[in-house]
Length: 328
Image (cartoon, rainbow, N blue to C red; front, side, top):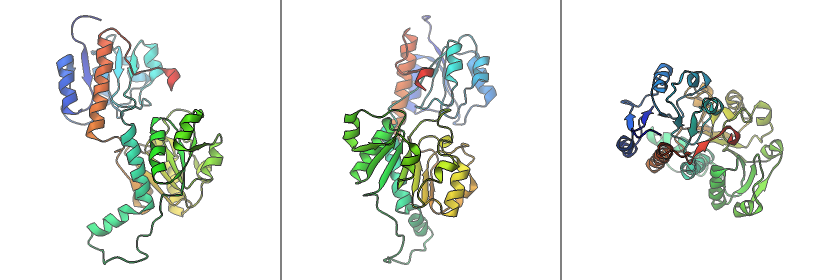
C-alpha cells in the first residue's frame, strides 16, 4: 500500500466518535446530511476513492461496480448484511468486501422478543388507548393477550442472532425449535434445549410463533411463500427482524387480514419503505422502522469494526471481516 493516507468515502452519517476516528486515520469524505446517496452520487464516489463505506441503504450492484475507478479496492460495509452488495462481481474486479458481523446480535435478539411480547400482549393497542385518553378503567376481559411461556417458538435461521433469540425465549419458558441449513452441534442444541427440524414445512405447521432470523440470499427469497404460510396454524404469530424479502409480504398481509394468521411483528419489509398498506391498517400487526440493531452502543461497535477492517487493509493485510461469495 502507498504511504499516503487512504481516501475513504462514507455514504451516510455515522456516530460522531466513529467519524472523528476515521478523519484522524484517513483522508475521509463524510456525508453532510443523513440521506442516502443517489445512484449517480455513488457512482461518482466509487470513481476516485480507495475505500467505500456504504450501509444497507446503498445498493452496490454489478452495474455500479462496473463503473468503479481503478483505485477502489475495498467496500467496507457498515452493517452485518451484505445482500445489498454484489460480492461476486466485486471479487471479480479485485475489490474486497467486508462487513461488521456479531455486534448487532444481542440488540436484534432483544427487539425480536420485544416484538413477540408486543403482538401477543397487544401492547400497541393498550398504548394507543392511553394516548387517545379512551381508557375507562381495568376490566377482567379487556386487552386479553396470551403468555409466551409454554409456546412453541420456531426459529428460521439458527445463527448468532437466532441462537441469542433462543436463549432469551428459554428464559420466558418457551419451547425452542429451529430449521437451519446445517444442524447445530449437539452441545449447541443442548445449551438452549432446541429441537431441529430438517423439514421447514413440518416445523412451521406446528409452531405458535415463527421468528425469521436468516439472511436474504437467492435461496431464501420468499422462503415463506403463500403455500408455506398457509401451513401455519391460524393462531400462529410471525416475527421478522432479519430481511423482509424472506416473506411474501402480500401473501402475509392477505392471511393476517382474513384471520388465517393471528398476528405479526415486523421490523423489515420486502420493498423497503414501501410497506403493504394492509399491514399498516391491521390491529394485530406491529410495525417498526428497521430498529432492530438501533442502539448507540451497537452503532459505535459497528463503526469500530469498519475502522479495524479499513486500517488492516491500509496496513497491507486482509480485513478480518472480509466476505467472500462462498460464505453467502
